[in-house]
Amino acid sequence: MVVSTLDMRALIAAEMKTYVSEDEGNFCEELQSPYFEDPIVQFAAAHDSLFEEYKRVVGPDHATPQEAFERSFGTGSFDEGTVISVVLPISEKIRKANRAQKARASKEWALLRTFGDEYFIRSARQHLAGYLTGLGYRAVAPLDTEWYSINGAAGGPVSNWSERHIAYAAGLGTFSINDGFISEKGIAIRLLSVVTDLQVPPDMRASSVLGHTGNCLLCSKGICGVCITRCPVQAISKEGGHDKIACMKFVYGEESREWAVLNGGEAKSGAGCGLCQTKVPCESRNPMRAAR
Ligand code: B12
Image (cartoon, rainbow, N blue to C red; front, side, top):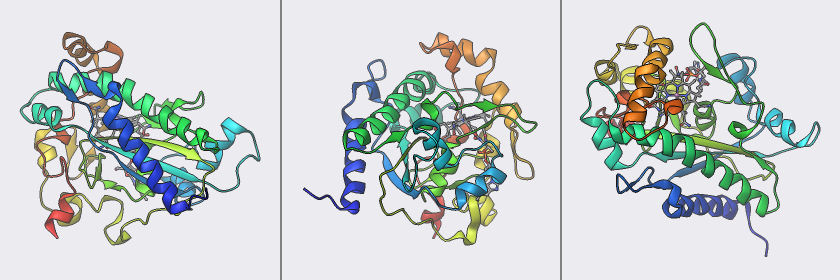
């Protein structure tokens, strides 16, 4: 049977949808809720010139898809291919609980941080890579490699594979004033990606008129700024954007680790925070689409 490249896109999207809805790692018994709802799956061409630009935008160590692939499969192993990016929208029950919070993450968000972010997303990345391998393609999830790292920089931590920049390249949305990524399912999401030598048509990026922050109401229309008032440590401002160091100290500091454990999570994950991702107009939709 010959499967067209368009059918391959649909097959992969359907596989991830089934995985997210059926895998028991995506269900929290204590909350009687899944961590994540139906994913959005989109595709970027591995040789998109934007990936070269990321060496300037993110940092010189940010890997191109070709570098990511060849670090796993050997120099010269890559010719053409695709980066698959997946948005995992956080479930309504978890978002709702965090909406009520004013000072720190809810119990639900803390459990999501350990068991959703750390465990389920890793298994979902590996599932996608394994699925492609089963179809006869080579695939790697950069976050699961030995070369993936997060390095300290003056402005805050920077990784050498940024899931948000990958999602941007795949046309899944844009950044916000608070750095968060706003997709069609909003900002209360998580992201994952895989690089493969499978070739499929890439998704289009929305018009670049509004730039890389086009989905943010404050950046695009000068209105909103709700995330600024939601932040419990004043780490977001209209002028300065997002203070990553202040955010990091709060989100993954000692108190956050203790709060994670008190709520049944693991200290090393911290409890997260996510107040800038909940009770905001972009929580679960693209507010610019709603505004048009
Ligand atoms: C390091 C890190 C952090 C650091 C620093 C965050 C940061 N902004 O970089 C700290 C500890 C502060 C942090 C906090 C949180 N994080 Co975090 N974090 C990461 C991590 C590991 C790497 C991020 C990275 O490399 N950033 C690199 C820098 C350069 O990127 P940046 O600042 O976002 O990029 C800016 C510039 O590039 C700029 N830009 C300038 N010119 C141009 C031009 C173009 C063309 C483009 C595209 C961009 C661009 O746009 C961006 C926004 O200003 C990722 C996982 C991953 N590997 O991707 C998760 C990740 C970003 N975190 C995530 C989450 C959920 C959180 C928290 C909500 C905590 C929680 N779990 O409760 C908070 C929210 C903070 C926030 N508002 O962003 C999610 C993002 C979800 C989303 N909707 O965006 C990710 C993707 C994890 C995941 N698997 O889903 N995080």
